[in-house]
Length: 204
Image 1 (spheres, rainbow, N blue to C red):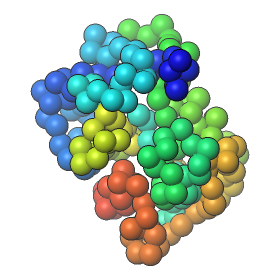
Image 2: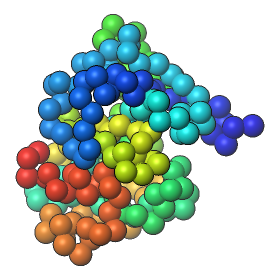
Image 3: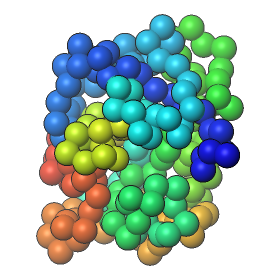
């Protein structure tokens, strides 16, 4: 039996990403990538166990970060989290895979994607209200096995208060941290995607 219980996840071919212009790190040129990546002609659902080991495909991962003033929601990935290769690392990102349960009748594929973003956030944290959000960047890190099979889409949520609670044990020590702390003492323990976001936070 698959260790992922037969889960299917949204992917795009790596060659599509390369054709658009692959990059290492972070890009804010979202309009260049998003329409093509979310076009259902270019993406499909694939068995997760196979996708995790096949760099010929990129798993599309919404990576939502939450800002209140100049503070950002930060947590440490606990052992119960789904990606064992990221345990104990600091993170700013909430999110996960897009699954068939998120499918919507939408010709551009955006509704399915947006439904997946909302589901992942609702599963992991409690917010007092639905905050404003926008897509601000894409993330890619081909320097390690996790990054080679994932492509992140950064959503920035602007919060009106510090009220946020974790629903899962996988989000340990959830609290707001200043940009100064994230660029300083917390930086070295951040997972690579979060480091990319901290480096570019002034552009968001």
